[in-house]
View 1: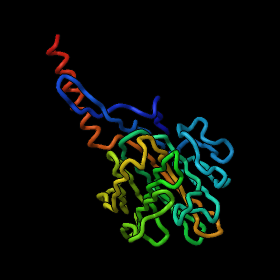
View 2: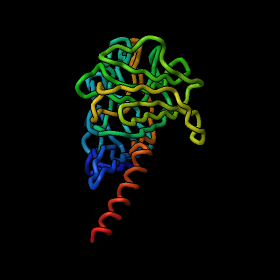
View 3: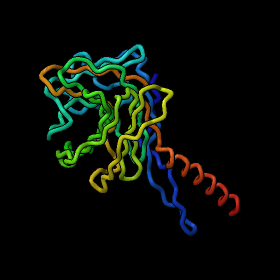
View 4: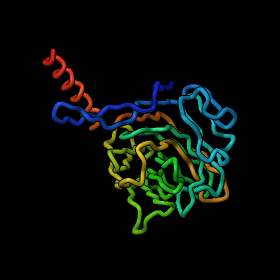
Length: 249
């Protein structure tokens, strides 16, 4: 079952001034538990609520949904790393602050397979933030600026958790994971992208193969919601606006 918003952006956070209100933006809720059958390789994203597929030529014929899961196949020798940004990405166009999560139940084939949640600059394939369910039995947070993953090591946690989460607050992206659904989220790392990453980004699911063999990742229970702090702010803002209107009557 999918919950598809009428719009992919919504003004939800308020900052109060003297007699005026200014707003920042945050994501509209969207979820997909992949219960409906759909062949992404044959039919693209039509009727799914998703906005598109980046690097669709790298998507394999096994990219199908149904029965509560999505199998996402990507060609061999595809990466989000080492100056490459060529793996298939199923994405939503998301505006502003968000908290996205998904469960990864399997990553099969390929000598060095990985999968996860990725936020991509629509205007620059080299700018992205990636919460990676990594082949080395850990979760790794990769950050690429103009095609370069900065040196000094990438933050990681182990053992690898199949539940992954990627948040945005302002210009900061943060990654989390957990092993079991009832566990607390483990913080992996964060990065402040400043003005490099635009307000509207492509957010979604990807898999990659660091070998010549195709990789298939299995996802379930994807959701994206406004980042909690932004959601609380808008609730306070709506209440304040209502109070002001009542007083002015």
